[in-house]
Amino acid sequence: MMHCQSYELKIGLPEANVLRSSQVYASVSSTPSVCEMQAILTAFITLLQTVVATPAPFELTIREATPSPANIQANLGSKLCKGASIYFPSSPEFGKFTTRWSIAAEGDILVVVVPACAKDVSTVVKFANVVSLPFLAINRGHGTPSALGTIKHGILIRLDNLDGINVAADGQTATLGGGVYSDQLHAKLAETNKVAGKREFSFIEISILRSLIATGSCGCVGIVGPGLGGGFGKWATLKDSTQILQLNVTTADGSEVTVSQSSNADLFWGMRGAGHNYGIVTSFKQRIFDYPNGQNTYYVTYIFTGDQLEAFFNQVNKLLNNGTLPKDANTFALYLLNPEVSAKPVIMFQFFYFGTAAQALPYVQPFLNLHPVVVSNATTLYKDLAHEAQMTGVGDPVCAPGTTKFLVPVGLKEYNVEANRKVYNLYSDMLTKHPALNGSVVQLEAYALEGSKAIDPAGSAYAHRDDNILVSFSLSYAPSPDNDAAAIKYAKQARQYWIEGENGRQFSAYTNYAYGDESLQSVYGYEPWRLQRLRELKKKWDPKGRFNFYNPIVYLITSDGH
Image 1: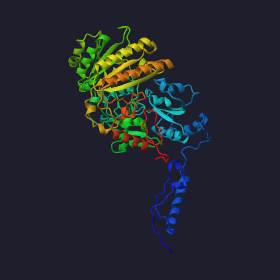
Image 2: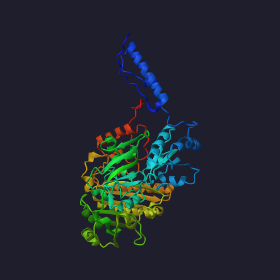
Image 3: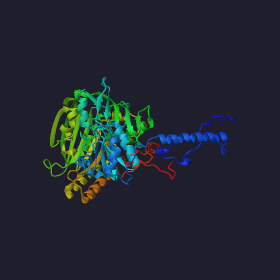
Image 4: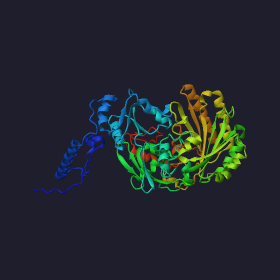
């Protein structure tokens, strides 16, 4: 009797349970023996049994080029958690969920799904893959990069219901759902006198208490979305590079993975600065800290006229001191139109101090010596700062959707006074010739960066640690082709003035503000190794480009798919 030795065969199940003969292979000689043939046959039968026994994720009742509402409801609805919702264009609620802060970023949505649990996100992604529909997950819908508007016949996944905020019993960490937004978090953490570490989504660089999209501390903006691209705000002073302990992510194939320094560490690196490219964060765990100064924040608001511009920027540069602003201080400024003060644009400057008025006085006195035309100051709780100091709370007009909005940013080392004079004059010219654009502003953001600069630049995908200042031409206007043309013309010219003012320094564009025409290098870094690593991660975690609607990273795909 013949006795056959065991053979280790490489035989497997291809993607989507589609069996092709070319994908079944074994480690045998070119001329297999009887024993080898017997082993191959046994393994092949086992594989077929696996295919038959593996249920398809969705049994479509009707095969359609574009699934109908009835088909989607029948095949997807029954697989979602209790409390989940599906909305079609005929639904009264459809517009509520598809209207974004900027209508230019809305795209073409076929159906909206509002998950009731994290598992629903995975289910929707798997369904979208089966029916070959694009999908986009959002929280509050404040992103503006132009790629957002390119989704066609897509599934919109709204994370609103994933809004849990659970503070650990020891008060050292909090677990947040992917649908949490800023004002919501402020209020919850204030109950425990805690603050979530800004600027350290260990550089998911998240602005937990200051989600900076558009005007500064917008309380209506979600937490995770801005965090995936970097974050730039008040809590950059915190030094701990391990603030984010864990991310729970749904990947492009619908898998649910844990992402941390010890689990999927490669993805953890990429999510912190380029995360929109790799997955959907359904929740995350982060360290939290005690509020400084008992939650109180002192702030001043000064308004200067255009003829004071040079003196103002010279003084700001002294205060910022090449990225060494005192750790308890932050600044924010705008060029804006305020007819009550001047017929021409004014400069509104705000200084925030996590301390008392007396402690802040040495920093603000030089600005008072410039004789601003408007002076105001107050102390407020941090949770109320967005609304009280800047009118950017969840119920304030700046958070309202329904107009065209976008930003064109540049990262700076310091303010070039001549360049900012050119931008001011350009902005003034735009408002004079195109009054329909008078809701637009120029943003000038500079924060304490001690914590950010203490982190190894190679430690995450975030590439802009060398920037000390973030400036952007921020457009807002009623939709029209004429307004579009004028707005982008002026914004790009302003960008060019700022770039020229950097005197040869490489142009950088903050990921969350990027307009969409910038190079990958300007958004994700100029180091060749950095882009190579990001592309390798893209190929591994999103080989079919399912997450390509937010400043997408692309890689070369050969004809054989490798």
